[in-house]
Length: 220
Ligand code: G3P
Image 1 (cartoon, rainbow, N blue to C red):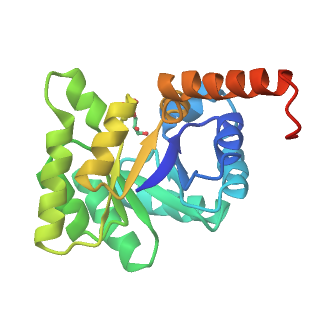
Image 2 (tube, protein in one colour):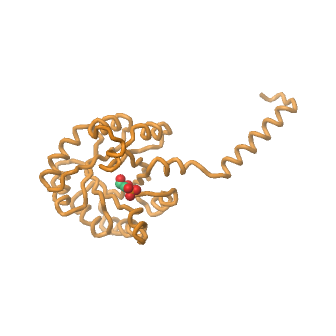
Image 3 (cartoon, rainbow, N blue to C red):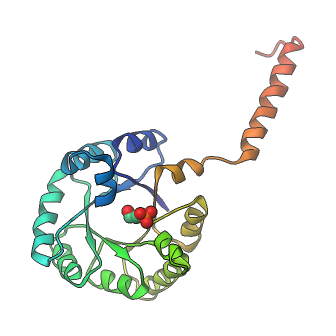
């Protein structure tokens, strides 16, 4: 499963990329607005830090406007993937952009039927928002299970990008289901590294080693 960072922060992308396990980045208008920096410039910089796909979202809501904006966004970097919302006008835009070879991430997906439409329109990936379904009392991962099943049934090539990831448990579930990609905030990414037994185990190894050396071992 590919690991993406869900952020509009260049600093977070740099920090995560330094570990060598980051495969891509997703942004959205809220995340970009939170940073308060120029949108296009931010995407350009992120595209230079990571080699993998960088999603940049359109803000137009009619087909023609989305297509026009998509064509501007792909000029920002060779790895830009255009994010289009899963609305009827969006699906029309996805169909046309995909036919022209432009990679599209269909965002704001909350049902398997919406994901079916995204795949039929030729989307490069679909983003089911798991955490936001959990927020309204549904089980977001059930939706991802069902999308996986539908895509497998018909051999759709559209990737499943597990989004609205709120915890390391979500990341594990994404990998168990067979999501192709999981995008997550930096705070969740950081949690993937840790286990209390790793920390206490390392402490014990080093304490034992230092005690052994203090006794005057010749091993250096
Ligand atoms: O970027 C799309 C998605 O991951 C947003 O997540 O946490 O705002 O629901 P969230």
